[in-house]
Image 1 (cartoon, rainbow, N blue to C red):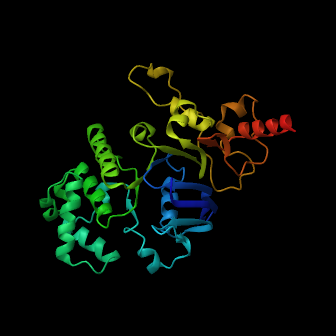
Image 2 (cartoon, one colour; image 1 turned 30 degrees about the vertical axis):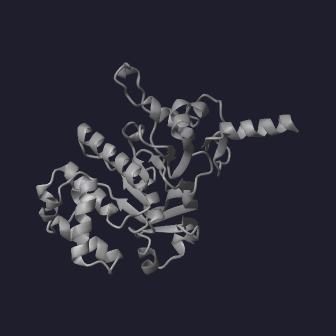
Image 3 (cartoon, rainbow, N blue to C red; image 1 turned 45 degrees about the vertical axis):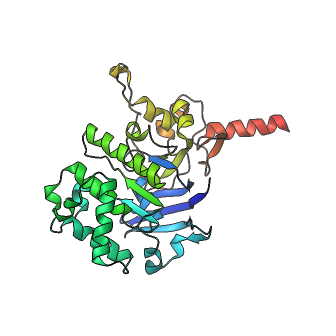
Length: 339
């Protein structure tokens, strides 16, 4: 598959009064053309900060302290987005990489009609389109999301939550981007509307060939449509691979805990267990595995989690890798046996 975005060792820090909070810690992964990638993690894991970093939209007191975000153009030119000026990046933002931001209820300006949102968005990134052309294109993308073009004359308060979410998806399509980042696209929506939005996005992916990146805390919502998954914990990717491999045989203890906590229609809900403990305070310099205090392997004495924390993902098989000492030890033992 052809890569579209390559994230290398991206680190994002927030300079707070009581110290430096590392929200993204040495994150690396690749997004391929035409795929649907899910980035999963509980609240505070760094998902939204990672998305802001990819778009170079990290706000004070946050700062990208290291790393690269490469975008591959149609001519296979490799562009480091983080080295571009604000005006240069504007050429890529929305026309190449678009975003559906979290909380549809709050993302639309209540005093502007829907058509004005489309006009302002396009003029911010493509000054060559006339207002008439924008309205015509807006009607087309509204049809993609199964809304009548008459919605353009509505104000946000006249729309339901699901309709607002579809308007935001239509806004992301207005300049025909190659990639869409969707930050918690189904949060605060009822189950039926969630299913409708996901079905809609899957159809857009199939019909238009758009690469989709979901950022969510709810594995169950997107498990049926993603191709690959990246699991985040405390600012790090702890497991990464094809969704079937990760779900059927999770390699990292945190992933196992997340999957075990998901209730099903047939299971006894009383047997479902939450992951013990709480996420760590990120205002510290970690010397060991960040998950160790909550890890069943470490707590049972099966892992030396207090040793220096691993800085890499270890290959589990051809389709999956994990940031777990268990696999580092397996690799070392295999090397010794082969020596």
